[in-house]
Length: 194
Image (cartoon, rainbow, N blue to C red):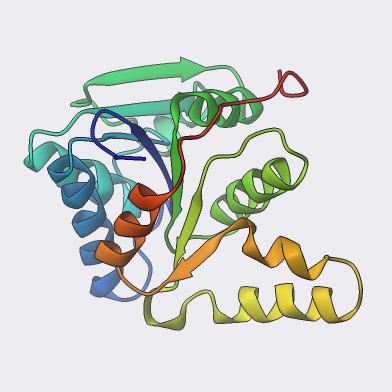
């Protein structure tokens, strides 16, 4: 699947984290998505990694779609300069629209919201609700504890070993985008979704 003219949904923190390198990573991802001609689909905020991500894509004149619940439009300081902004009523609606607008998913460091989005989109793939590729950038080992928990759940019999391949883990942006672009064309969302 070539990423040009495709939607890439990125899940990441609305906080900047403690290291400047996190913001640099988000900026790099935004620029890289724009450079390959894809549309960035994200949570619509202007702060934290979300803001760096969008600003990076916009700096390369990329298309950026933000999806943000009305209640968070102030808390996450809705980005005013996007190509398209979709204001929704709930987090559930936000995630559903992001999933529908995406052909692939990319996960960066973040907090509970990022974990929630990542786990849900992997679960949806496990349930055959979608067959879109998911890449997790394990920048500086940020996701090591989460990956260890997945392996622990596998060893304890709660996750089938084959499901470990529902997402791809990489350490850098070029490898993640190259992998996403090498995946088969997704069929979309199943009737079970929606």
